[in-house]
Image 1: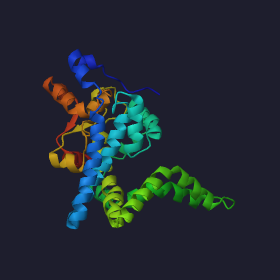
Image 2: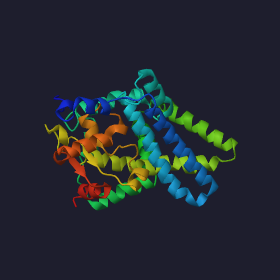
Image 3: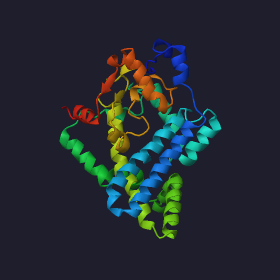
Image 4: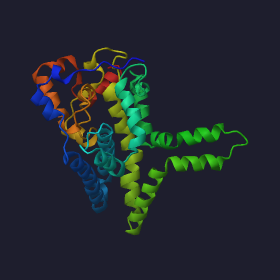
Length: 307
């Protein structure tokens, strides 16, 4: 298995530029985690006060749930905080995902990005697809079907394929153990909201975004990052795609500079909050002309559907 071709930072940046771009902060990453949870809390408060806003709240919170994943992703690279223990602890407790499981998988993706051994290659392989196929996927996302399949599909398959001497309850117990963090944290959240007489707020403004808007924006993110990127290319400037995002797209689709994905793959030592600056520097040097860059998510979807 041949790893993906790498670039050297000194090829594109001066020593001072690279020192600034690759510097890790003892407070910015933690502040972004606080910002993410603060945005979720503020959106919930708005939804509780004015229930008519709940459809918008679902989109904002679903996007910030993706934001928690993006910040955990930075922690997987050791970028959230310069102290590794603080980096990992903050991600595990406040990043909304299991860092120890995600890190080795994701680092393999970086090592073999868009090469045959890339574990994420399956996500981009089916494209382009028809507009009708994309619409069906969007419907499955927004109706919770994707969430149910991702969260409980493995258990359903095991139960369907189990042998007569296998206990269904044993399989369920194993799945509960595997998903214990998800189940416990959501049970505690529901209990706390229920104790305050707001059980419906947890369902409508935490579980509903997780089951609907989060799968959709995660799909859009995957399409934007690697769909229709040439496989087994030796050009490291075209292993991923950067997508320009408007204010609305950042608020509802692409949190915390996740749209600068080509820069992230080129320079994995740059924290997410420096990616936009890296893009501007590369643009000033004419490098972005050689990269895969799209003007917005609508343009990406048009590309993904053969338009």
